[in-house]
Length: 306
Image 1 (tube, one colour):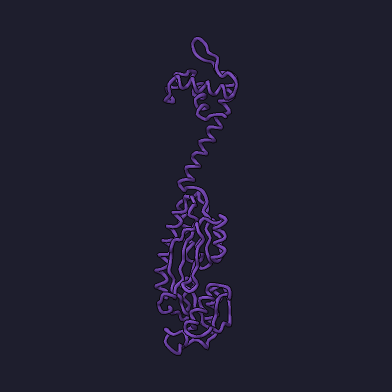
Image 2 (cartoon, one colour):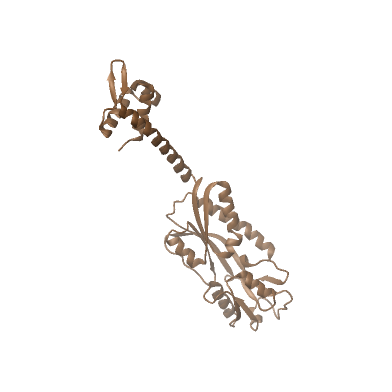
């Protein structure tokens, strides 16, 4: 197999016409240059130089190898530079998976910060609920997965995944603007006769609502279901029901009255980033930092909105 160092030395010997001068340029000894050329001759099984009284004369084989080797050396140098850029996170790709409400508020600044800082970086985004994001993480489809878990619907994460806490969301009660609560909000039981708007029956949000209401001694009368929080808010604004949503899903609306559920150990949704512990993507650390910063900003916005 050809050694790139031998090709570089060959080029210098041909250009200078001297083992000694090539050695001086390369910082080698004349003996080292001679040994390298002898090794290259063994590798190609051909004589590369004709020794003359006053110097050396490269053979046609040496001239051919040097000419073709120049392109190879340039390609190797380009490859080394690309590898260095990849390891430094200046180029490459980061694959991110997240759920819809985080994609709407948390993720855009993260993607923007990465692509603006590194013009050679490609960021790919996939969307799904936590179960799908976990599948993508397991098969290497994403580098970072943003997921959520309700206090009342706890989740466990597979071995080999590292969780990073990003955000703790309050749960928010949404009521039509002019609706009068027939009692203190501390008791959701005052809403037992109302029509409720919930996410789909197999979702964590629906399970959380059922458990919240069960703790107050009633089962919510679900009239409408949608996993699209725009639809949920629209139905509340239209005055046809009430809902409980996580803070990320709330958007101020003059037709809606929003109120945090009373603080307790069970009225929160937690947003986390998960990544494989063995993931060596050089952009991973920067992505996690950007996610924490974005969530910090969103947390401040939420406090002002509700």
